[in-house]
Image (cartoon, rainbow, N blue to C red; front, side, top):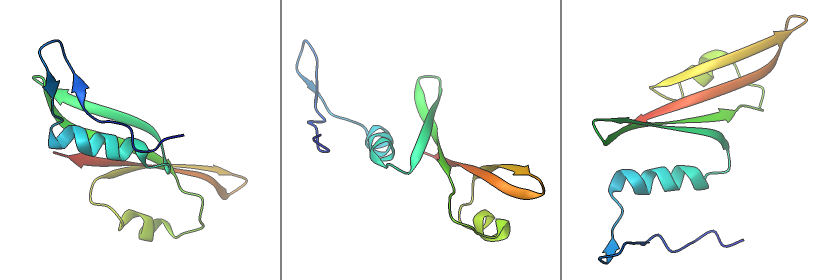
Length: 93
């Protein structure tokens, strides 16, 4: 599998270059640690991308919270033990 595809978009009139926001979205899509992506647009302008990852390592929740400024955590427990942590990181443009 080629990890470096041609990023140029060809239109009828010629080529169209990617914006810096589009480049950052493609970079996030190539990051294998994320499983879900959500792009938020307002008035046709990309405002934010939300990327969800599953945290596998055993870490203290306080240390997970301190790793990013904008994030949501989903924590599931069974029999009093944490069995799943999903983190959604929000990046504003």
